[in-house]
Length: 235
Image (cartoon, rainbow, N blue to C red; front, side, top):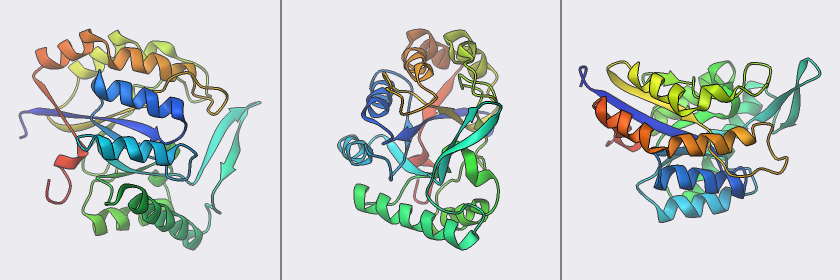
C-alpha cells in the first residue's frame, strides 16, 4: 500500500446544528466526504445519528467535545465547557459519557475518534483518547494516519481566509498528498444563524467539496477515496 494514495475526507461537527447536518449530507452525497465525526451533546445529534444510520456507508466517529473557544478582542474566550479540562478524572468521565451516548444514538461503536478544536492533541485528553482508541481498535486523529488540516477557512485568530477552502487550494493539497493513507479534515454546513463563528466558510466548503473539478483531480491523481471504517479493527 506504500506506493498508493488513499484519502479519507472527514467532516467534523455532525450533530452541531441541522444546517451542519445538511451540509455534511450534501458533501457526502454529491461530493467527496467519506466519513464524519458526531458531536453527541449538541442539539442536532439525534438527527445526525439518524442520518448516519440511514446511510451506513458513511463512516461515523466520535468528535469528543469538551468545549469551544472563539477569538474575541485579542484573546480566546470559552463559549461553553462540558467539564474542567485541567482535571484528568473529569475529562475521562466526560469523554466516557460521550462514548456511551454515541453508542446509544448509533447502536454501535465509533469508527474513529477525534475532538472538537483538536483538544485531544494535548493532555489530559491525549492520554484518555489514546486509551479509548486502543480499547475500541479504531484510529485516533493524527496518530498513525496523518492529518491534513490545511483545508480550513480561517486563520489562527478566527479571521476569514476563504482562499484556503477554494477549489484551486483543495486541488493543490490533493496533488501533494503523500503515499499511504491521509485524513483530510473539513467542516461543511449550510446557512448558520449564530451557532458557530465558522459560518459562511461552511457553505463555501460544501461548494468546493462538491465541485466536479475536485473529483476529477482525485481521479487523475490516482487517489482512492476511503473511509475510517476500512482502517479500524476488522476493517
